[in-house]
Length: 288
Ligand code: GLU
Image (cartoon, rainbow, N blue to C red):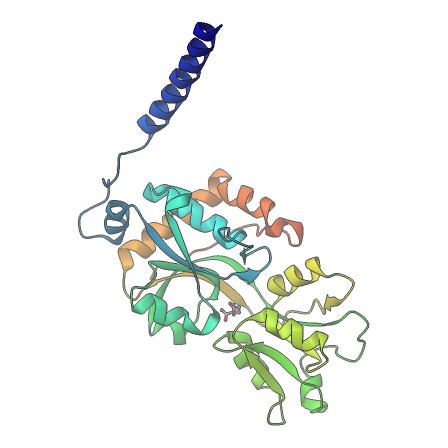
């Protein structure tokens, strides 16, 4: 009996050891790199650790539960890029990058890249560079489910008593300021979930940012909120990297194109934003 049990334990140990050694064979032992010396890819591959910025409170793009890595479409894009670097998911170190810190976190080297519903624009391109776009959203407005008074951004011009909330350092905050007429009419926080609280407390009448972000919030609380469904800007989402790191940027662009062609993009989409929005029919990355 005792002998039999020992044999069984030994057998399990052999199987477990066998599996572990097989898994090891498929991966290059760290720290090695297939990339040209001096490139960002080479540095990250050799470090065996990838520092990435995402959002943490945006359902379907970057949402972090308790003690877990964030989840969402942006996170899936990160995982695709990490795999190409030979970095395992558990070696990706996620930092929360709220809208206003993004350029600084990249320039200072605190993160290697940012995938965080990050609109490509010229002002940001003065400080950093972007791969992508990998998606195009549009700014929209979220209101209380029973609100019929807000039909578009023009309302903030005609009714200065209506307050609207957005996030500091975001493109929607800038855009909505063009419609506001009264001081204090645009209320700004660091993250969108604080805007939702302000809407629930009736401190503001609306929240504005990209449609797919707002739709993510509606998907969580459909009895409380609705989105107007009338996007009024174009928000092409890019992957932020250090300014003028053309090699890293173009390498990421190649991955985005490949992933779109081979089904990895679709798998990422279906698992996340697919619940609320159709997948883009094509993507056109910028090579500059
Ligand atoms: N895409 C917009 C931006 O990059 C809004 C979403 C966000 O704040 O991340 O500013």
